[in-house]
Length: 193
Image 1 (cartoon, one colour):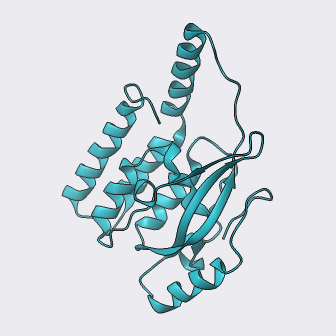
Image 2: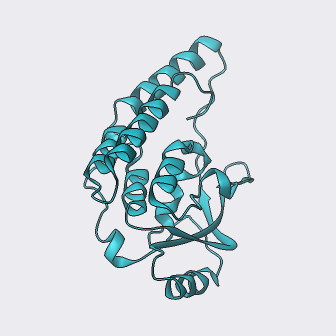
C-alpha cells in the first residue's frame, strides 16, 4: 500500500480491504470510494467509481475498460489501494513521468481482478495549477501539456505491458493495442485527458 503524507484514509478501510483480499484469493488489490481534496480552496470532488474502477473480472474486459478511462477521473489513484505483495512488489520507478502510477496499475490488472470496497476509502490532496486567462495562453498551455503526455513513456509502457502479457490471446493483444492508440489520439480531441 502506498500513501502520501497529505492524503487521508478512513480508519476502518484497511481492515475492510484485508478482509476482502482474504475472502477472495483471485483479487489482487482492494480499493473503494475516492475524492480529490483541494486544500488551497477548501473544495472537494467525489470521484465516480465507474469512471476509474474496472469492476470486470474477465482479464480482457478489465484491461480494455481501464485503458479507456480518462486520467483525470482518478485512474492513477488505484495505486493507493491495498495490494497483494506478490503482485505489486517493489515496482516504484527510479524516475517519475506522467502516468507511471497507471502503468503499475495496468500491470497489476494483468495478474487478476480488483475488489471494490464500498466505503470512503481514500482522499487525495491536489494542488491547483496557475489559471490561464487569455485564450491563446490556454491553447498553448493545453497543447504543450498534451504533447508532453503524448511523448512521455506512459503510453509506450502500456503497449509493452499488453504485448508482454502471457495470459492474453493474440486477438486480445491486437484489440488492446488499438484501444491504446485510440486513447493516445483522444488526447488531441477531448476536453479532458
